[in-house]
Each structure stands twice: as C-alpha cells, then as structure tokens.
Image (cartoon, rainbow, N blue to C red):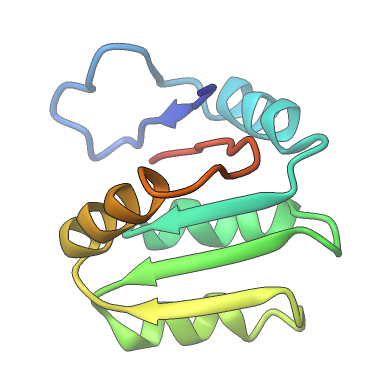
Length: 113
C-alpha cells in the first residue's frame, strides 16, 4: 500500500522514510490522492486537515480521532462523503483489520503524518 510520511519542524528525529521537505511532502500527497476512492485520516489533525483541503469532491473520507473537535472540523468541510469516528485509533485499526480479514475491499491509499 503506498503511503507518505510528512515530518514537521517539531520532530526530534523522524521515522525512516519521513519526508522532511514540506513542499516535497505536499507533492507526494497530491500524487497519492490522484485517483483515490477513499482516504483514512487517523489521529493526525494538522496533516488530516491539509489532506482534506487537497481532496477533490467525491472521495470518501473517514476521519478517526479520539478528540471530537478534530473529527468535527474535518467532517464539516462541506463534503457529504465524510464520516467521522470518535474513538481510540488503536482500537479502530484492530477492529478494521478484523473486518478486512472477513471480506474483500477496494484498494486503499495511506497518507500519514
């Protein structure tokens, strides 16, 4: 599954494969968004808002965060394709894996921050 990890100036030492140049990271986000049918935004408010602003209409967005204000902010971007889930991301991912193991799903693209 393709993904992009974008760093910030607050990172003490980015994870391997982290793009530390914000312009390059934004270009990579745009490349990965092209043709995406669904985007999972998982517990990274600033990166999720940035990606949400780059996402064309018609793309299904699922925003998962423990903070209800983050979910509301991302889902109120005027898109009827947005779904917000207020929960712990670790719990959400565990349940998602269980469900995916039980069925066939379309190709997903991951963008992380």
